[in-house]
Image (tube, rainbow, N blue to C red; front, side, top):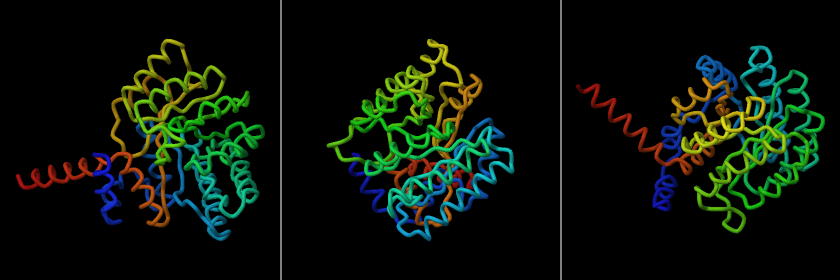
Amino acid sequence: MSRFKNFIINCLPDFAVYFFAKPYLGGNSLEKGITKAKLLWEKGLSSTIDMLGEDLKSEEEVEHAINVYLKAIDRVNEEQMKDFTSISVKPSSLGYLVSEEYYIANLEKVVSYASEKGIEISIDMEDHNYTDVTLKSYKLLKVKYPLLGTVLQTRLFRTDRDIEELGDINARIRLCIGIYREPKEIAYTNKKLMKERLIAFAQELISKNHYVAFATHDEKYIKRMLAIVDEKNLTKEQIEFQMLLGVPRRKIQREIIERGFTMRLYVPFAEEKKYSIAYLRRRLYENPFMVFSVLRNILRSIFKFGN
């Protein structure tokens, strides 16, 4: 069945992908991303803003990305949004494909600028080719910039070791199963197992004085984590919850907010449609039922209008 779904999604032309998965997108500009973050906050939802644009190979492209990130930091600061809006960046957007040294210098430029303004920033985790450099750069800079965070993915075999190797740096970790389809030689393929590892790793990270952003849409596992929060009297200084923009989970989101915890949505924007398409296609692979959900809503609207 999964092969059939993937086949269908592969056959979708770009315009259809954009149409079906557009709810996952914050807009086609930084300003639209900022506006979306403000609208979410009116509902009590925090956000992390990210510019889509991966695998940048030229210094010109990278410098443009850096300037957009710096402008994003300025806008969050100017609009007094830092209490509910953070920034996310990707190694492949900041020049890793040019050189590791270039990437780390660019990362520090962006992170130090955000730190000066008291704005949280996270290094996103891309596929397994970037895991080593992502964690290396994180541990290098976390000592200087306490507000810096990164991501660990429970689908990877190596995550047990990566948690152990964090040491005592009081890391800020977004914990998720991961979106990239990794080789079976290095990653689990059973989603239930990945989600069980979410629960286990979240507790382990918190026990080691790391801050956890528990990122999943599965309400069963969110409720299990909330039960652990109650049992262990965890506070908002130890854990928050995260989801993607566009996934309908308003009821559980409201419950999390009412409990006094941060509920943060990932708000990506893209200045170029090709980057939107790549991101949105991954979202559909992960959640193919979005296609059927959109079609159902369209048909309902048509029949309602016809009546």
